[in-house]
Length: 171
Image 1 (cartoon, rainbow, N blue to C red):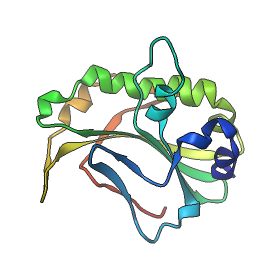
Image 2 (cartoon, rainbow, N blue to C red):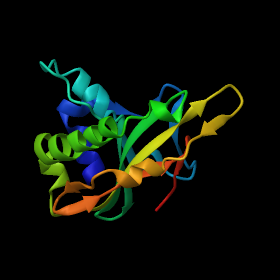
Image 3 (cartoon, rainbow, N blue to C red):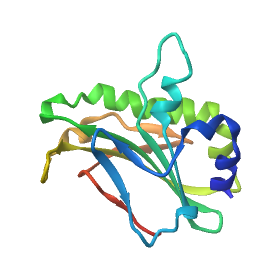
Image 4 (tube, one colour):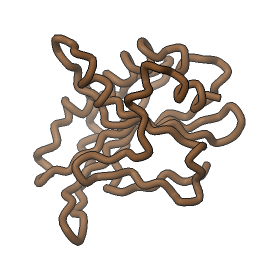
């Protein structure tokens, strides 16, 4: 199973997590989703600890969720807690997802994400807003429609907007 294979990879051991949170913005998991049915990989932490001469921009999390035997949902997530919507840079966001798809998934960990025994649905998410003490100010993220589509495994994907604290639900 893909999740077990990723959990067993020693190169990913330091980047596994139970949560997908960054600066107060989180992806919530439906409590009825068993923990063994998903895995969170901290992609940004992975790149920041590689000691590369120039650290590439990368998204915060990659969440692999088991749906049924051999079928998975893969969610690539960038989390932003920003004061103003204008603080969101479309080029930076595109670069982050591009790094994940072309280097992390297609190069470094290709054996998992191009393995024909696994069937998965890929989704790219930007979760952005201003988290305050008692509420979250949500932004219109329509600018994502202007981003050039990203390619992975001969398919094209767009980045979808989400409000802070979306939930990963059972498939």
